[in-house]
Amino acid sequence: MSSELIGVVYIFAAILFVFGLKLLSSPATAVRGNLISAVAMLIAILITLASSDIIDYRWIAGAAIAGTIVGAIAARRVAMTGMPEMVALFNGSGGIASLLVGWAALYMHDGDGIMSVASGPEASAISPFTMITVLVSILIGGITFSGSLVAWGKLSETIRSGAMALPGQRFLSLFNLFALLACSVLIFMQPAWTLPLIIAVIVLSLVLGVMAVMPIGGADMPVVISLLNSYSGLAACAAGLAIDNSILIVAGSLVGAAGIILTNIMCKAMNRSLSNVLFSGFAATTQATKVEGEVKPISADDAYLILEAASSVVMVPGYGMAVAQAQHVVRELGELLEANGAEVSYAIHPVAGRMPGHMNVLLAEANVPYDQLVEMDDINRRIENVDVAVVIGANDVVNPAAREDENSPIYGMPIINVDHARTVFVLKRSMASGFSGVDNPLFFGENTRMLFGDAKQSLSTVIAQFKN
Image (cartoon, rainbow, N blue to C red; front, side):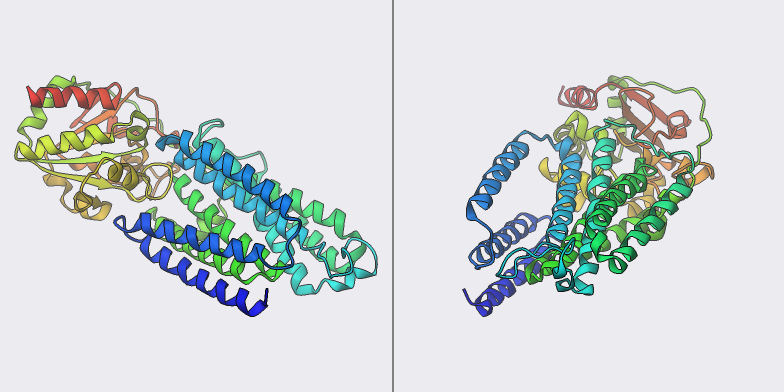
């Protein structure tokens, strides 16, 4: 197949990528945008397979079948609460794939056989630019892979979700970076040592990924997921440069750019700089002030009486709503409140849940009208006039410690000021702290009532009272 035809098809696929990304900007067109992007990727893969430089098709078919089986089973079995972990694994898969592609670029066919930079006179066949792109794809791919595995562990709570730092974390991270730089320079100075040095770069990049994500926890995890998604795109772009594949460069650039833009938006929502997130692994962690007080429990029946008299109600969903699968009863309660004459809205914090847009997806699944979703800044402007704020499994995004406690790890993060509402209901199973492990003084507020139990069951009881 001619290179001109392949180039034309690649351009067509790239246009579809851009168009698909555009449609992803709206919930109404997101499904169509996702489908168009998937079709574009299929076209790019098929035209690449049709070129003459592809390895034995039997290897490709085997890998495609295995990947299809794993993907289909995972997509059918994963629950909505497991989507953040699945996205983390997707990012890690992209990272390790780019690492392997970059590494494989050192052993390219030239028509007469396999060239290797690790030995022999063929070392000179690898240009400095290609070597740099190989190192970049391996470095970013390794960081993305190991960092994503740590993120998966935190999100699934296989490991402790809070921030963790090793003794001497700052020194170890700087030493790791210095070692990576030294190995990269030595590869150019001593081409015969390329193989062991590349292996050293892989190991160091994997360690760096772990050390970069371990000190991050709690409310920062959605930002980390977005950042790792961007890393996976940048790694793919570098891998595309290493093997001179234009569609991989374009696709990787789009993913990397979209991820960086989303990360920047979320950093602004967290009142933090991008550099603060990028280099948090080099900083020491802080400990929040211990919060004590007396909580005021309330029963579902009493909660109904207050809600029945309310003229304005704000629902604040969080990860707990996803765990309880309570989004449908939340929507049902909202409809009953509206029928009772109350104004109902849903306040969405930009980093609520455990991945970007997590709450929007859940509420869309329950057919909550999109125009009832209110952004944090808008709801905070009128929260003092709200009769009842119902916090459903959210913790960190409504924690007043972010506003008041300078020692808190989440200090400075903008929150939804539900404590300024006339009455606050907090639906929780227990008094356990949130994902960040930070105590929440909201639970002890004068206007706060704790509705303990499963959120879905508690709201169903309130709904039953309305219907009766």
